[in-house]
Image (tube, rainbow, N blue to C red; front, side, top):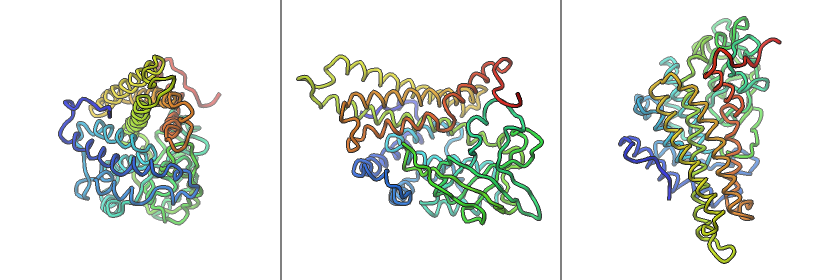
Length: 414
């Protein structure tokens, strides 16, 4: 039986969104995954996920979240937006981790553009996004020489983006490289972060730009072949004298400070997607141990199996409660929202990984078989440990938030 939030706590909007997503996952996603266990291992990224999967998501309205209503989108109640995103992401994670991430990137970038993009850019790009179910968006921040470590509590020039942007004659010229970018391989539109002032810290000298895929000087160089979440094509992008019109600047110098509307919900979405993966692993395992006979009795009647199953359920309910708590903090703009977002990201990634490990073990030899599908949950859960910041870097941020006067600086000159 699917484990869900107490229905009495949900608004009518939330119930409808949750049910719509669940119907899509049960009708489209899960049957596709079960019938095509080998397909995610294709090394041609363009052939992995059939376009029909995104077309069905579009038909269900699941791509439209965060897009302003004047462009045909669905703007959720701002008082419960993060909580509603969490409900939807949990259902998608129950279907497939990679697909959940592919769609969630569109939501997050849409919310970001809604807040920071000038009207002429919104009017140009939101209609294109809405018109094409295969239109994906990506958020380009991570670089080869700096990823989640850049978000530790320091702000020195040494931590600045290696990607640089300079303005001349009405155009920005971008040079640099981005890697490990969600949707990076097949996105049509990129939000790109670059240093625009080398003399100050990262928080004062980073700008963001809206860069279409077909811009000369932008090259998608590879799809990163990951162990899990393989239906989201993670990519690497190079900018070589990539010239962008001056009016495609989103935020000058203070881009990181203005991107909280992307980063905070992003942590919630990671934890929620992770929860969905754990729920799917638990449900399949619960079915297996109540049907499979070992030692003359069904597995669930063995005490060791019962204990493990109970521990899995406890962990998932704890993750669910924490996701709800952190999402409420984001929706209410609570003072401790950043700390809670990092906490729930760490907690969910570690607890769900353990749940999927138990699921693998409770299936015995079946757990390692590709056609059974349990190993997929384990692989997908392993990727969550370092998505949207590593566990250790997140822990450093948590401690810095709790003890700002005594926690370590972690970087800068010796």
